[in-house]
Amino acid sequence: MKTFYLILLVFCATFTRVYGQAGEKIPVPILKDNKNIDDLIEIILKQKKRGSEAETKFQTDSSLVVYVLKFKDYFSFGVAEKSNAVMNGIINKMFFYKANFGYFNYKKNNIFVWTKDQFYDFLTLTPDVEKLDYIFKIGTYKQPAGEQTINWHYKYQNGHFSIESPPSIAN
Image (cartoon, rainbow, N blue to C red; front, side):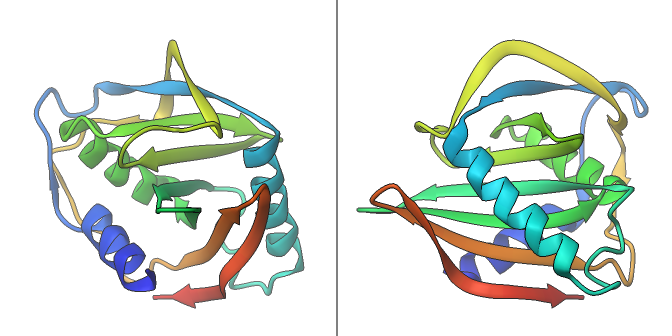
């Protein structure tokens, strides 16, 4: 499972090509969150507050991205913190491939969510979109050297979250 998330993150952070006018803002679908996803984000934000300086490096210029996957009897949540510049590259790729993604705001934190199939009972896709200042079409994107990503892996089964793996810092 960790390998899947690593491949997914590398895929999202490598070269990206998009159509359209560079600089044009991308409409990001707005999601409505519920208590279950709020509980997960609250866990992550508490982890961040207790983290080291390296773990909170992008605190003022970052967003969280959540990857939701459904397995036979549980859901897996991969959470990564990305600088807004890197998040722009990821959204460009999702927009280009018409991926199932959206965003919501939780306590002044932008939370982007991607899922292979649907948002299940954790989120609801609204008919609304928002154009954020730092999400715009770009021609080519390469992840900046030294960009740090913080990953958390959680499992949701029988109404409860548990840690799939401990938080780690990857370069």
